[in-house]
Length: 177
Image 1: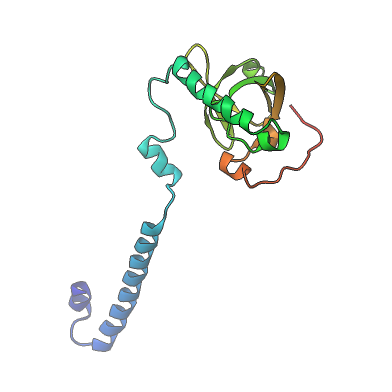
Image 2 (image 1 turned 60 degrees about the vertical axis):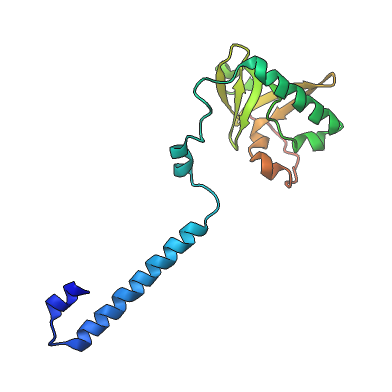
């Protein structure tokens, strides 16, 4: 406020009071915004990137260590009873997936254990120890459970895994790969 006093001086106290009131309102708004920002519970994409949460550890985990996770996933999936509706809503981290068909031919035949599932991609750990990111869109995935081959159409499956639990799936006709 010293800046205003220097410019306006003591000659116009009503002008100084008006500008002071306007500036105080702006300061209050800024304080409210900062309080609202502190209430935020989820991280933004920028914050996740800065924290390094978007990518896994630098040396990917070995395939052998993730076989134990796959065994746990198999027990979990078998406990679901093998019903299609339950498998649609299941968590797939630990599942051994194979890309059965894809619009991009370089993805076909890629197989591995699911390290991470996001809304649009599966991150697979291959037997060679490489992490491959495969988009769900325009891809068809397959996995074996209790002697049955199950297929997942990635284009119908582009939802976060936690949102799938409460979602109702509608049958969709043509699959364009």
